[in-house]
Length: 469
Ligand code: 5AD
Ligand code: SF4
Image 1 (cartoon, rainbow, N blue to C red):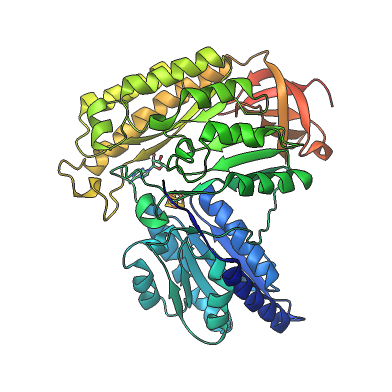
Image 2: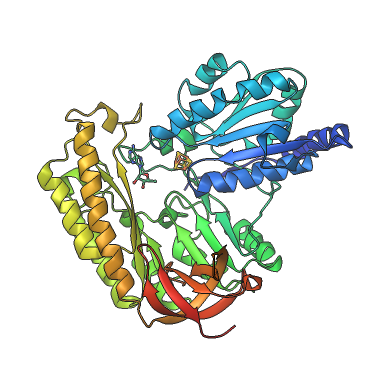
């Protein structure tokens, strides 16, 4: 059994004291920050912590960079284009820094954890003075203090494996929240950089997770998404005394929790118990994001995914037996090294037979340091592009097919936003199974649950009408 380590109360208190001292210095100065977030929900969640810490230090949020005293990019490195975009963004801030020498420019997140990256950026961009990684958010007060004293600071730690509880957070979505249940990843899919940048897999204690959800629901939040790189392996190391399905049972009865979601699921660890929990717990949503990555066994093996096409299809089948209205979404990579036309056609046929509600599709992007990046038989870019196009065309047809089955469907929708159109205000929101529907209505209903009947379809969503208010 593995022992999870937690950052000590003393260490957190000493950071807190620094934060309070900074807040005192900032009094009356009206200092502002912009935090710009790239990548996945993990980063979105981390940015909420960073913003909460900055608020405690007397900064307030703005979305206007020219008005900011601190600009922070929270980066992703899962695919290549993110890197180019970041370089462009940082370069563009040089002028702003010249006009406003006191401006602090920082970069954090996954990309900073890549070997050599932090040093390279600090060297290339003299206007950047703060760089930190994904595992040291609790030390932001100390880092910012050093930067405010004129230092240029780097803190990235790839071996880090502790959990910091009770950090401040700024949540700006009043209806829905992400809750981490675990950090890091130990799966080492051969294409993936995440295990190298987010550290060893470690699970939070059930009581910490439950307490966080209780307090979120007390504040009016009704939808919780449990987050982890592979939520199905929660507690597999024995450190929490609970498996993922037990955790679902442990948190599902929190008062006020109407919708419980989770992501991502790894097919190799999705147990019968979890399927039963989805089927029986009334507020667990009928949607599973289940990345398949490829429909070909040889490629799955080379990806180190540790399941077969058949095993994947049997999970889908079993879940549909237990939960007839369940929807699946997925992630797929095309052009993985060694992917023949035949292997690619296995992916197409899997997509055709599963009928995903939606698929997030990617051309394979070699990441330095991963096993797949060193494989021979890399696929030429034009071939990857063509396969991606073919796959997207197929999925677009499948999405429409899936949408068509909803005509006449009636169910409860959580309203997430609205579009003011020329003639009418359209509200939008999701059914429990993640299908998005647009319907005319009053924006005052934002964040409420209403019953909606589907009357038509769009390319990627449904059209409907409210049948109560
Ligand atoms: N190239 C392309 N796509 C990738 N993903 C992860 N690593 C890579 C890579 N090197 C995709 C996977 C994963 C999603 C978050 O990003 O499909 O599920
Ligand atoms: Fe998320 Fe992975 Fe990107 Fe980090 S590298 S932000 S974990 S997708």
